[in-house]
Image 1 (cartoon, rainbow, N blue to C red):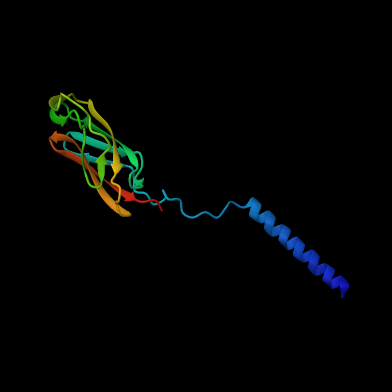
Image 2: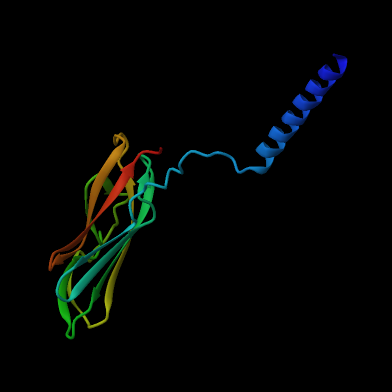
Length: 160
């Protein structure tokens, strides 16, 4: 009887040691990473000769957080294309993202040609408006006034 009790104690200790070793060696069980379900951070808009590519530094954003927006318009055509853009703001946003800062600028609206293969680049920071409810939102990024060209991305507001 005493021998059976000793075997039970040894078995329990071995079980505890095996479980502990397995827990120490196995990767931790982690919930889904908050960025796993984030939408793509790149969007494109195309005309016959122009392509706009927009990249966001993140598409999962907490209210009040700042993200970087990079928009590049490329002339894929065989001849120069005259474009009009806002040299100060660089881009116009529609949706829950707002430009993080206003620039002091004396240039304003510019009309200029983009040569074949050349590009017009805009880099700005934008903030997700504080108080934005968690959810998915479309954000429209327009770099050119004429011809109008805009790309739309989806963002996820809130941390999950």
